[in-house]
Image (cartoon, rainbow, N blue to C red):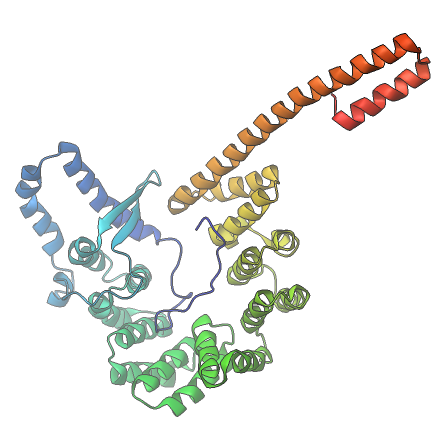
Length: 431
C-alpha cells in the first residue's frame, strides 16, 4: 500500500457490501484472531513440538465446541475450495500492539474460521463482517452455512440476502442465488446490489440478454456500484473495444447521482495525457456529492493522479476534503506520498499524525513505514543542508579573500563594501 492506492481493479465475480475488500478487519475479528495468535506465540516461545502435541486435545475442545444452534455444519470445516486467483496463502492478523501476525491459510480455514463463526453465530452484525472478510479471503465453501444463518436472523434483510447470494454465486449455485435475490426484492423492495447479483446469476444460467437488462436496471438504482459499472464497461469493451467502453460509461454518467463513471472516464483521459479534461471531470464529480466526499472518490482521484505523476493536482483537489476519521488510510496514504514526493515534510507529518490519532492497530504497519520514510528524508535533507553550508562557507571565504585583495590594491568605499557583502550573502545564503 506504499504506492498509489486506488480502486482500479475488479471484484472477484460478485457484489458485496462496501466493495470487494475492506482495508481493516472488523474489531471482533481482530480479537478472535488475537486469541489464536497468543496461543501460537506461547507455543513458539517454548520452542517445542512436544508441547504442541500435548495441547492438541485442548485445541480440539475449543475448536470442536458446538454452537448454540447445535448445527453440526458449523462445527466442522467444509472441504477446501479451490484457491481463487490472488487469494492470500497467509491470513494476516494484528495483535493488541498492532503487530502483524500471519497464519497459514489451511490452518486458518480449518481451525480459526469455524471457531469465529460459532462465536458470532447469533450476532448478525459481527457474523456479517466475518462472512464479508472470509469471502474476500476466498473461503467460499466455508462461508455457506454461516451465510444461510445470517439470512435467517439478519434484521437487515437485504444484507443477509446479498451475502448469501454472493456466496452461492462463487459456488456456481446460480438457480438458488436467483431465488434468494428475487425473493428478497419481492419482500423488501429492489436494491442495486441484489440486482447486480441477480444479473450475475442470470449470466451464469446462460441468459445473457436478460442479465444485461438486469445489470442496467441495477445501475439505474445505484450508478456508483463498482462491480456493476466495471462489468457494464467490460461488456461494451468486448463488443467494440475501448471506444465502445467509454460510450457505455458516458451513458451511465447521465444517470442521476452518477460520479464513478466519470472517474473511470477521467482515468482513461489521464492515460491519454489529457489532463485538463480529466480535471474537469474530477471537479464535476466533487460538485455532485454532498460533503464529506466519499472515500472511494477521493482514493480514486488521488491514486489515478499519482500514477499519472500529477502530484500538485492531488493536493489541490483532494487535500481540502480529507478527514482522517472518515477517509482513513486509503486516502491518507496517497496524500502522505504526494506531500513527501513534493518535499512537503511537515504537511506529510500532519496527515500521518491525524491517522495515528485514529488508534487503528491494523494501520500501524503502514503508518510506521511512512514515519520511517519521513525521518529518512529529514535526515537526508539535514545532511545535504550541512554539506551545502560547508561548501558555502568555503566559497564565501574565497570571495572575501578576493575582496580583501581588491581593497588592498584599490580600497572600496564603505557603501560599496556593504553592497558587495549583501550580494555575497544573498547569493550563497549565508546566515
